[in-house]
Image 1 (cartoon, rainbow, N blue to C red):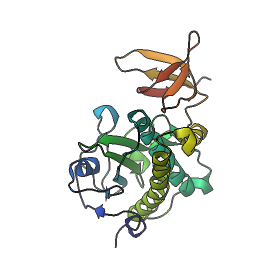
Image 2 (image 1 turned 90 degrees about the horizontal axis):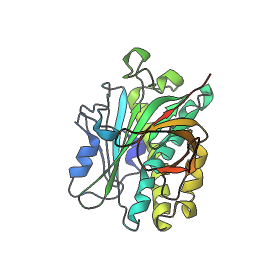
Image 3 (image 1 turned 30 degrees about the vertical axis):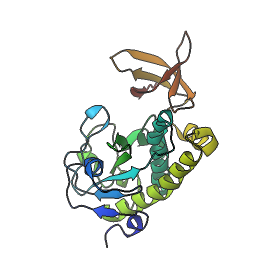
Image 4 (image 1 turned 120 degrees about the vertical axis):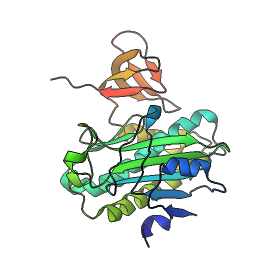
Length: 259
């Protein structure tokens, strides 16, 4: 059986040899239940935030999607879902690269990085019935010369061992074992991220906080300042050099480096 660890954690687990998008598969699937998962090592038409393409070298990257039932969450608290997924993936990947000393961080709102380079992206999409499909794309065994950008990395480049399928199952099973109960805790708390513990966890693991950042806001304006925290609905709080703090709900964040 492929994905033996991960398939034990999902009501329905489907490993597809090839698909355009695991997110699209679950967005359109009927019937579908909370916790259902679709996974592949061969995704041909993946998408990222802002409708960008996600480059996934065949048999070297994991693409997987899980369906979450947000019944009981108020609309505002759904903004926590990408951060929750990012935190769960950060923990999963950190366990694989712990021996090499790589620093695994969550870049707001939904990228996971190792030593400042992107190894995983998270994309949440809504279904027509209100369900949320959370997709993850993880660079597993991509060599340096096949990485899609100069700011990307892969697990194998940070000492993770095993073939792509074995690594994919380890990553995904650990991710699901963290994500599903953490999401249930958020629902049980009525979407209150502080009461569920998610707010403190996300702030502790978010590598964006405390950094000088530039945020490209919807519409093209730039916001410069220090990322000082997350508010009650998961927005990034940026403190500019002058003026009041700004709560950012969406935008492209760049971590600025000064020599």
